[in-house]
Length: 498
Image (cartoon, rainbow, N blue to C red; front, side, top):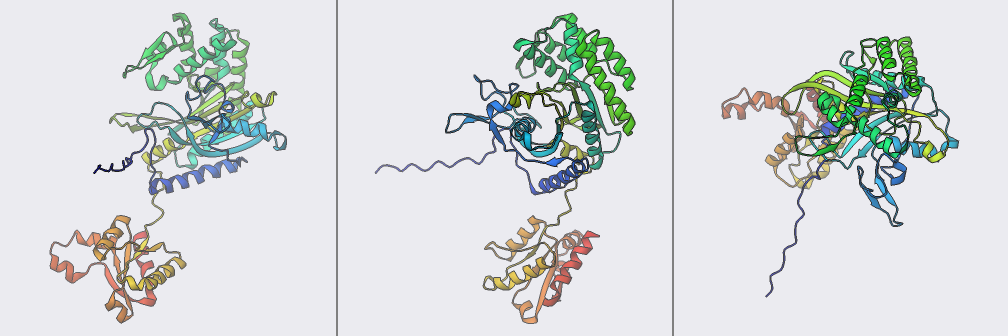
């Protein structure tokens, strides 16, 4: 007789580059998002939600090309053989939304969005393929005042979340200044070759904090091989050109006036570069007028941002306090958000210029930072009170007890498993229940309930060595009339809340 093949069981495993999120983190996330939303609403921004997937061509030329539809994003074909991709960020879908609804929107259009984005990139420690962003954008205004306002919004958001002044810094630069530098060193400003070279330069500079100046020089030149052996092709600049780009990156100064003077010297006679410096000067004046000093927002030529669609001012929010890395080293926490002006994204759809600017918060990274600072509010929801099922035939009675607690705003549940009292108590301990409600035959006959305070019981158990004393003392367990259930449970909860 032929042996039957056993069905192959799927292996329970999390896909690479993804993570599960537990209840504690989800509750903390909900409160954090509510705080961010409050600040964005205060500034007059309106919520909007776009789908997690878009037609691939709507995401922009900085992402996949026709020959490599999965480059950088997760893509698939629908029944019409059209390519769809999971969104790479929240900005490109916004550009599509504005273009599609352009005539019906008040302009400038001010919106905020929160949601997961997906990147088909090599995962690593703290680098996930799915992560959450929270964006605010103003579409339809060319003035640097909109960019300045976004920077103020970001600074106010950090403080609303409990990050003290001096522990964060909004850093501001302008892509036009970098274009002016590239123009001054003889790199042509048009064509696909320029776009690719420019993007390579941007991404090299964007790695300055993480890799250091020597590695950036290699990336600006022929290329660099990392510790894993992976090779990254460089921008192909000559030594003199590299030195000029590095001079631009190092043109910082403590005050805005000093930075502006240094940048004018670096861009030379480039009209594009000087226009970028003028926009930074206007923004600096607005920061000063609104009371945002250099301890909150400062000009920093090293900020360029790695995405190719930025066309003007760019900004990055950096946390300046120190934290322990996964390797046990002490380092600055680093960037938790960034953004900038992107005047060409909506124009791709409309064929007319629609200027825009925005800022995106990396939610997961910011949560980790708040946790380091002890500012992550994750303990506000107490575990439920558990009503034990001592007699399965009396489930209706236990359900009435649970409902009486819920009706008074007490989080509670009836044990729904099929196990005995010992297993039920273990369940309550694993749930972190503050107390359990017990009514067996004896309690029912007396018209009473037993309330067992598990938190107090755990404390007392550490102080009692003798089992007999434990049994006789029945620590933190007391009887009450059935009618006093809610009041008795509330007294236990109040004891531990205080």
